[in-house]
Image (tube, rainbow over all chains, first blue to last red):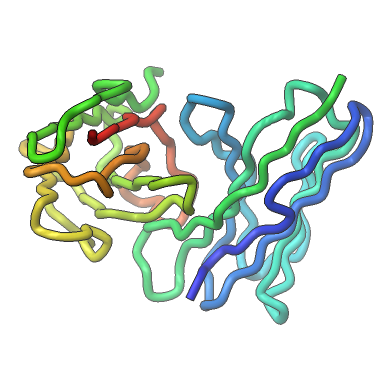
Length: 112
Length: 115
């Protein structure tokens, strides 16, 4: 079974618009994290939300977590061309010890 | 503070050859992880070191893969012999020892192409 499935797989928007990406998972978690990857570069940690939290903000990022539905969303407000990247959700915890389980990612393209 | 570094950035080898990837974690980070992304699929966990000990190697695909972390500093991942399906991007990540469920710091990855 796939842990951390994301939708949409690709999202194309105009600068200034909001971008919403969703992630679903299957097993119990300790926390859920979102990472960004720019083309050819490593993953950059964006935000972490713990299983007992429902919403978290960081700058233009807003993350929600619904453990009853085993889903999370990442909202990027007022998008910029520089936000163009792949975004991955990753879950940690449960019976695991530190390892992250990633989704397939959403490719976000922000047109200037 | 220097980030996680990986070497080489790209490697192209022929099927049957051996390749060794290297990861230098952030100084002082006792947790070191290897992941890989194959053929545009999801990033998958390979293994986890705590210092020099293998904490979890449940993601290692088969015995052609050998990871080491002698001395608990840098780590190497050897693929021998390489197969076509080993092509992909290999990521290394590190984190401090006590923050087992917090963020991991990733390197830029090594892109491996097996011809």
